[in-house]
Length: 255
Image (tube, rainbow, N blue to C red; front, top):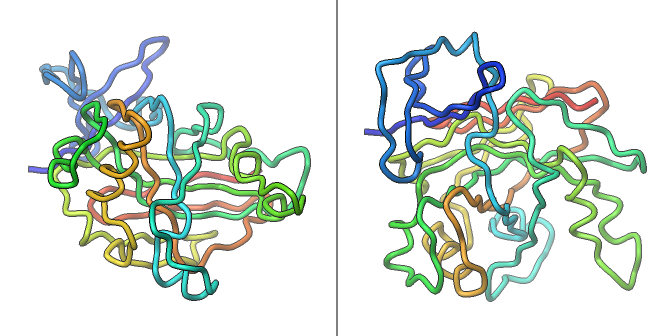
């Protein structure tokens, strides 16, 4: 049975638990191993949701959807193309995405996030799903016009690495078939992206396996699967929502 895991703060204390309707069943132990549900319940309205996990790193894919790759006339990649987003970018549900001091065109990229549940290194593709804990919603925010400003150096990390540029949540959902998921991104209530995860060039299994050949993945690490058509600018004062049925809706303001 699918579960929806959350992290939240209550005063100065941080807890985790399973979201059921408008209440959270508080758990003890380790979310990824031997989590123990308690008899304590908290109303969702009375807590402050945090990012559902604390990654050591977030890995973000480029050119992983056929529809966008074909639209941009990009060559089909032979292997996953990715960068790493640092912890300063992580932002909780309902948090504010901060406009960079440098200005520029800031765009949203609604994405599915794969949450690792068990450390993996050199994992065969056939075993990869055993290392996946669940899935979350994410927005891979980018200052688009920084990317190729310098002809000698593509600035992927800077363009995607500003403070608050990686909102994700509100939950980690377990027990889902990612091939059946659809990502929708809304800007001020208007649908701008609506695309299926089944259009990925590299599947969840392939991403986890191939990336683990390069980098050890730890529990809580997140792989952003890349985005598809419909990426667009976020005007100051706008609200961006990333919704995936079966997971939930991630909402953030841009100020």
